[in-house]
Length: 94
Image (cartoon, helix red, strand yellow):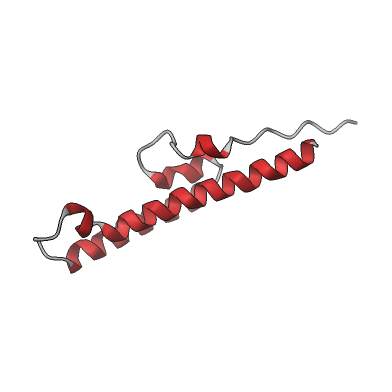
C-alpha cells in the first residue's frame, strides 16, 4: 500500500501577512491553536502591564509596548515555524 503524499505546507512568506490583524492568529494558520492562544494572552497581559506602568503623557505605542513586543515576537515565531516546515517538506520531496 502506497503512502499518501505529504500535504504541502504554507510558504513562509505567505504566513507573514496573515489573514487576521492579530499576529497571535498566525499559529492557527500553521495548525497550532494553543500556541496562538498563548501568544494572544501574553499580548493582552503585557499590554495591560505596560499600560498601567506608564503615564498618560506617553504615546499609545509607548503605553502598549509590552503587547506590541509580543506581537513582534509572534510574527518572527510564525515565520520560523513555517520556514522549518517548508524546509523539511523540500528535503522530503527531493
